[in-house]
Image (cartoon, rainbow, N blue to C red; front, side):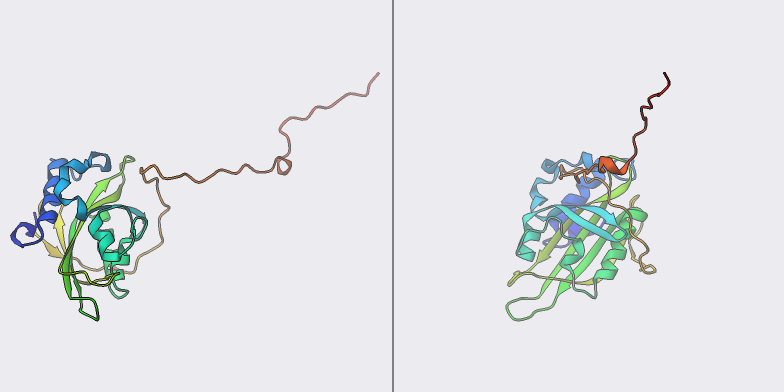
Length: 219
């Protein structure tokens, strides 16, 4: 378990983490279908669900109001790296991929410098792995809490530190950033009732008939 409970303002992260731990029991992690919003009712504003669509890329499928407030717009469908400055995005992608590959939980420590109309902010993002209904580790239950007045939006953050926690309660360790990410994976079904791609049949003239009638001219 991490230290979110001991820091004022980060209670929602502690609630989401405790819920995830209770769901998994003696398993490595819970399934996406195990998640019931009523179990994290007090933290829903800060919670989100990510889907892994490529190596190091996770898109938001569900997001609480706090995330929309930070960006000043609807965030569903955005990559989670949209919340970070360009210099931090590669490190965030690597940390996210570690969540899927270890698997285990990671806490990102965030900061945003002050500028005109934008006060300085600090925050934390918790990333917890989930299995999809297919059994692959391709979902994340997350929680983002930012402390301070948001100011003008959108707000983007620098990654100050990423801390890893083993799924079985190991000691927290800083994330070791890996080699540049390799080729992307094919996207999988999301399980969120999204429209499926339409199927277009090939024109019938392009394919010869399988059977052909032949008439005999014999008398």
